[in-house]
Length: 71
Image 1: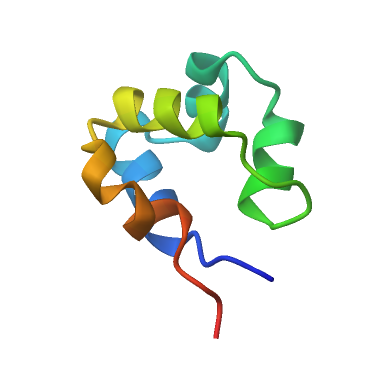
Image 2: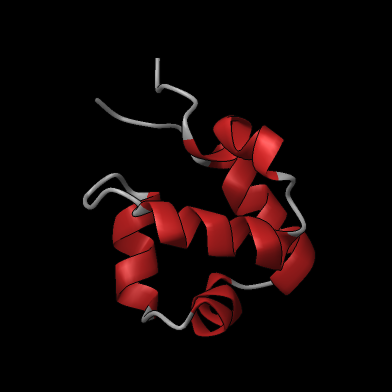
């Protein structure tokens, strides 16, 4: 099962400008973030909560950014 992270990537660009800056704010390496955004490794619940906080995404909208299925 693959997820579409297009909305998440756009939000990262809007708030942090680069994925590298967002990865640093998340406390993870760019490589790990890249693996998450490319469906190589799944996001962990605490990471999703932290990302939502950093990106000002209400938790009630997390499904739009993290759980949209790739078609």
